[in-house]
Length: 245
Image (cartoon, rainbow, N blue to C red; front, side):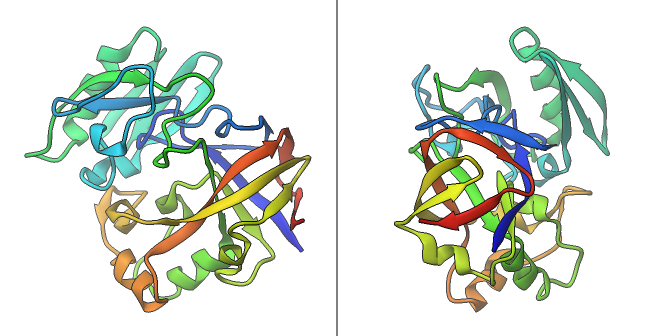
């Protein structure tokens, strides 16, 4: 039996993470509170008010130090921390400039500089997929990769929303194309998710230290986690059962 081991949201795309105990899933929408904002860079070509590709934003794949940011939500405020930066508290609706100044030293030299904070379009977060998806992974799959790593290999490298316990490694891939019951909600498992260089970064230090993509190739692919689209809304809590229908 698969159960929800942990739930994570990432209010600012590529910048920080936050564990939550429960969420209310809504049909056709991304995880509440997830990727509501992203920091655009000077080379971005954006269509405001719409979903835009991740290449328009600063991200851990190209600036690994961003992966060490942690975040805590308190009402409308976001509290951000990083081992190499002073703590910062912002209201993202009014403090865009303060955030841009704070993350600028974390962007690798030679990369396009951050310029502004961009809100997600209505009813969806700025996920990497053009569909309004929620990412779900198995802790057994994570353990299979971690076993081949030579350094501590944190689950936060994957930046997933839902982690499951109770599955065999890669068993979640067998659910693609099926509908699952996840807590009180239902969702269709749309596709596997391929991974990028962000997963090579130690999330405590922001330093690349594990050849994650090469390890995944040993398993015959470069994928980790699956993308869900919620088809029936409902409450989801840690400890809830997840079963294919």
